[in-house]
Image (tube, rainbow, N blue to C red; front, side):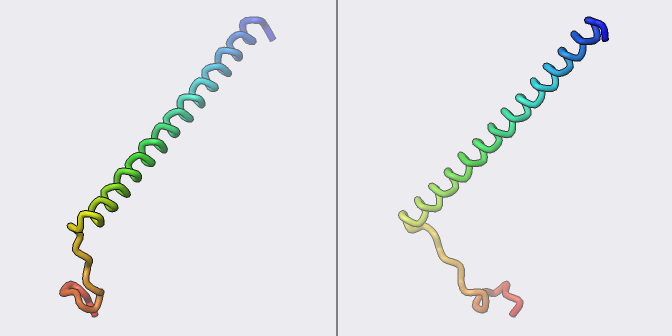
Length: 68
């Protein structure tokens, strides 16, 4: 195997490593974004409960759209 081939293989290996790192970073950012959104939704639910502007749904048998 020539030095040129070895250098080319090394460059390819580095490129694959860089791609894997970038993909991992993207997944981590997506997970952080989803966690932030879930936290915001949970805070909104708590706020709505504390303020009292939530109207509970009726029981399934009592609702107009119920099939039963």
